[in-house]
Amino acid sequence: MSQVAKRYAEALFQLAQQKQVVDEITTDLDELIKVIETTPEFLSLLSSPKFSIERKKQIVAEIFASASPIVVNTLQLLIDKKRVDEVKSLANEYKLLASGALGSAEATVYSTRELTDSEKNEISTAFAKLVGKEKLIIKNVIEPSLLGGVRVQIGNYIFDNTVANKLEGLKRTLVG
View 1 (cartoon, rainbow, N blue to C red):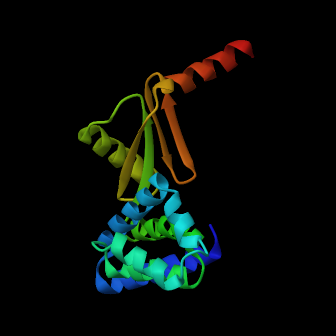
View 2: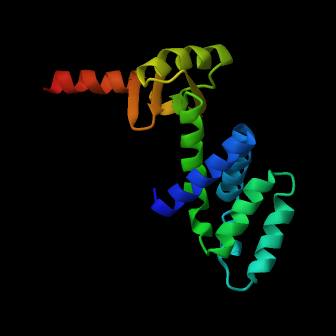
View 3: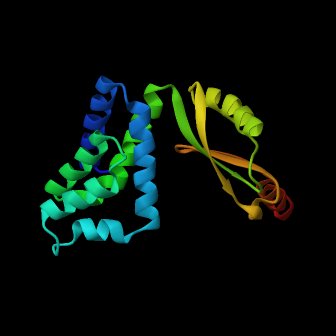
């Protein structure tokens, strides 16, 4: 994580707290990350010297017209400062700050099938306590190679209770 992205994220988070729009900003940043991941040309366009800074800012305002003005202004500031490449890091850092302030953490749960809401709630309840949080915001990733069970990743912590992992452990024990 770059120091630049961290500073921008902290400033954005403080502003969001003052205006009491932390959740709305988080949602807008999630959408922004989706745009970046599904359309890599978007960042290329914003970094391109072919367009003026004013034109780039205009494009951002048009594309994110329904987003919070705070997010649009932040993007435009990054364009001004030629720091558009930091936008994804900034969004991720902001989400860490927001979830930490709300007593929650983001978790990625790998499973062989889509988890039900009650399964997500059970996982959230069980694992949140382990990392000292009140709840987890769960992103479910389907990974058939696990064979069964789940693998939960919360920050640097990985809890692996998958059939594939247990078989690997058994194999190591047998092979010695």
